[in-house]
Length: 255
Ligand SMILES: Nc1ncnc2c1ncn2[C@@H]1O[C@H](COP(=O)(O)OP(=O)(O)OP(=O)(O)O)[C@@H](O)[C@H]1O
Image (cartoon, rainbow, N blue to C red; front, top):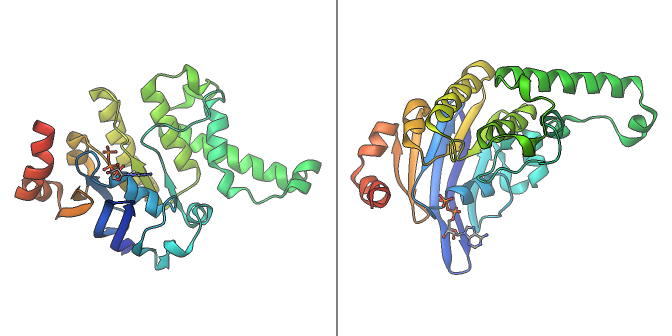
């Protein structure tokens, strides 16, 4: 089943055409990789899906619903969570506190019941804590629970960001460069976490990634972009062997 259908997306910043008639489809349960050289438009696509940017034209349908008719907070409520290229966490807060922030889209009680700390609030808090513990277990992060984010190494902070996105119980996870800044061992760990998230939680993953070793290991489908336009779509092997991709993307990386 198609989970996300992007059609004829166009987005310009002044004279720069960041996205040029981009269309692609993500099937439910897949890991879908978006690759391309710097400035290709990868993050802009994520920002359009999560409604930070409004495209000039086109359509982004998630399970049949037009996302361009929704505001950013509604996109999260629909089950789409994301991470950012540059880690965006509350640095002075603990890991657990950051994860509880990830639960905010699931909070159903209002400020009056919270003020009086009613039974519903206590019950809801238990559910949030249980969910965050499940995520900590899944990503093997229990030992970091009470650590301040600012005290963690970079690789661990990347995991916290992933964990926080998972705490929203998403159906689709948009990951902007999950392996950037990670060493080879951490990248291997990340590939296992992402496979677990796909296989154990059934979450669809769309990831922007430069690290082709990670993409090759886990992506079911791949789209290559350059200058805002689609160069090739297919399996990772098909996309990597496409002559347009080799010229535009791999050529630049090798240069
Ligand atoms: N807010 C913005 N204002 C103006 N131009 C922007 C803005 N965001 C992106 N761009 C431009 O749009 C184009 C696509 O940028 P984008 O960040 O999507 O590329 P990218 O493929 O994610 O690159 P990278 O791999 O370096 O992150 C670039 O030319 C970029 O300079």
